[in-house]
Length: 383
Image (cartoon, rainbow, N blue to C red):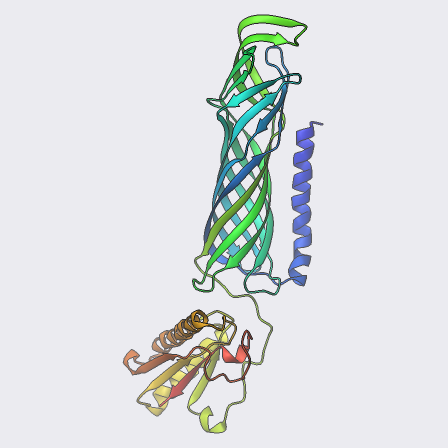
């Protein structure tokens, strides 16, 4: 069986095995639930391993040596909300050819090898207990093209001059490991840094025109020009990337179930309704919608003149001015969500006042950096 085929089968087996263990991982580590559509882009440094060139009738064989080049990747993806996400990726790499080692001598290179293609990736995000860093890993399969157009090789004694050209395409696969760093000031935006191993099935055939002599220094065969295929039997690339990812519908990490009916003074029960939110979220769940509906019915039945929606957060944001501004903005978004739902239930918009108080006036007093579920709330007050 072809060695490259065995490598592909091994890679696909490893990918399948990873999906078998992912459910176990999801039960032992909290997933950062990327949910819905996202886009990402990254750029960085590309490193080619030495590539083995097959000896044939006209062209000398050996190993190609490359210098570091550039990599660019862009992706469109979809998060499933449970730690898993899938994406379609377009990629580009280029690496200057330094020289080809021909055994007893070298042919120095000019020009660069360029590869580009697309991949379908599957990834898994993990929550390691920090709101500032989330590891992820994954794998992908796709199709790529390798171009050697404009690449030249020449020995220092001018015994050999070789011009390469053509573009070769074949299936490719990759492994991905990285870290994402959510930004506290833009919800849904994350910085990323990652490592990628990428390879293409071979051998990769490119055309070559050769002038000079062929053979060792003791036995040479002279010719003016020869043309044939130059087959590269190995291609392994390593890339280090920095980038950005933006989620259009960010979702907070899952929280532990809590009692969402805290005790409130009896004097306020008939006039105040409490709606609780998930961490870093202003979305209403079914229970919250039912509470808002109940408050709207009470408002319409007692003919109150005003209804007030006061938003609050917990203390999990950074304890500085930036964190304070973020909490106030988030609490105001929660109050606006309540207002929109009240309007749906027949409360006139002009009779609704909203406020955002951030982490002030907690129901449960805590210190900084505490995700207290009962403090992430909106109080609906009938006046």
